[in-house]
Amino acid sequence: MTLLFPFLLIWQAVGAPPAKVTASVRRIFGAEATTSPLAAGTDTVLRVARADTLLGFALVRAVKGKDQPITFLVAIDTADRLKDIDILVYREPYGGEVAYEAWRRQFRGKSAQDTLEVGRQIRSISGATISVNAVTLGVRRALQDLTTWHKNGAIK
Amino acid sequence: MSSALRSLTVSAVVCLLSTISPRHVTAQESTTLGGYGEIHYTNRSGRNTPAEVNLRRFVVYLAHTFDERLTFRSELEVEDAKVEGGSAGGEVALEQAFLDYRFSNTLTLRTGLVLIPVGIINETHEPPSFNGVDRPAFDNDVIPTTWREIGVGIVGALPIAEGLSYRLYVVNGLVASGFSDAEGIREGRQEGRNASFANPSLTGRVEWVRPGLRVGGSFWYGGTTAGDTLLGTGTFKVPVSLISADARYDRGALSLRGVVATIGVSDADSINALYGTAVGNRITGGYVEGAYNVLTFLAPRSKQRLNAFVRHERYDTQADVPAGTTRDRQFARRVTTVGLTYKPLFNVAFKGDYEVRRTAAGGGVGAVETLRFGIGYQF
Image (tube, chains in turn red, green):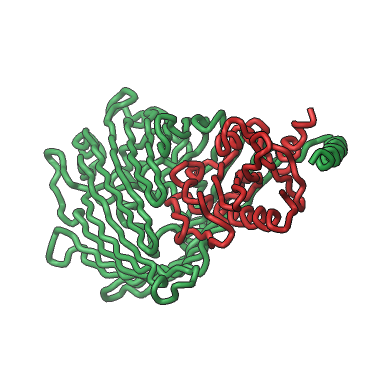
């Protein structure tokens, strides 16, 4: 029961169904990954571990697309490198291509020092420019926040 | 960890109890207001053609999200600034007004006044999204933008491979009596106003997307009698069939795009005999455009864009004519446009271009050069 609470918090805050968060964490960190919640600022960070080994952290947030929120997850490893992102809920009629693996994989291995910018490190998708810019900005901020919290011990 | 979890659990319980109605991002009912528009300065070559300025489009975008599954979207447009009784010109029109019911990523049911999913400009026409003050001439005379009709359909991702998506609609048909030699099927659109549903027509599109690349293929098929029994009876009588392909490619400072389309009007002879027109039974053409963001070497750190572009269009609204109709070569057009698009922000564009128009008729028939400036915005 208590295990469900962090997911309900995340659901409340950014509209990510618990099942999707769980599936995303398992996809990125492996089937044996377990999560526990950590409060950081106003966010709930998921600490991801396998048995006693820390694997990394995941943060779920939402950014505004053309007129709807896009709910996404950003996962980092213990060295603060971005492991992967997931688009958990997409609600617009156009621009859903940001969920494609071919686009998402550009973020892998990036760190907070990388200036993630559309047209430079991140290639755009014609016809999905608003979503591409929104998600890229959201990921950049999430990566910076996770890195800061991890470095100053707010999450460990 | 366990104490952290315990305190979080307590706060979570308090939080959940204090908000009886959850404030999910997902469940929020919301209304969105947006818009786009463009103002043009146009100066055509030749005597007695003074320059003209025009508030070409002013569009209000209004959308409402009822819940996670049901959304409404609309665009209300004023063309040429005003409409006044007794004087020609100007238009107030709905460009889109439809309801979406989302079942899943692969299936959304869409009904209402929808944009026909053909080519590039018809569905994506916000002025900062394309180079050139005016839309390509091809997107007026061959693909009749902004083409919208009333119907019902499905849209979504195609689960067979990542990057594939589709749209498929059944909408009201075109009306043959509006077809012309110069503008093909353009004035055959009904645009949602007391539209005849005598010829339900099929239209659809499949798209494949990779980072930097979007490729699409579209079609339209349907009858055009609109209940005029002199032209024929039957849903698919006097059919128009359209096939189109398009591609957009972006890499760093470079962007390329191109569209080709071919339209068959198989009973153009009957149309011409009945309405006294000279409609071609084949309308065909396309364009290619290349643009380069020159700020990447003028000001490499800048996030603004200054696109230098060139576009070449070739199309013929009488690529083939039925027996009994004389082919007029002035409808075989070649349009070359060079210009600049300055975008200080993604949503705002200042444009200037020079267009050279020639026809296959020779002797200067249809030869026009045009200088244009324009501003465009969206939000």
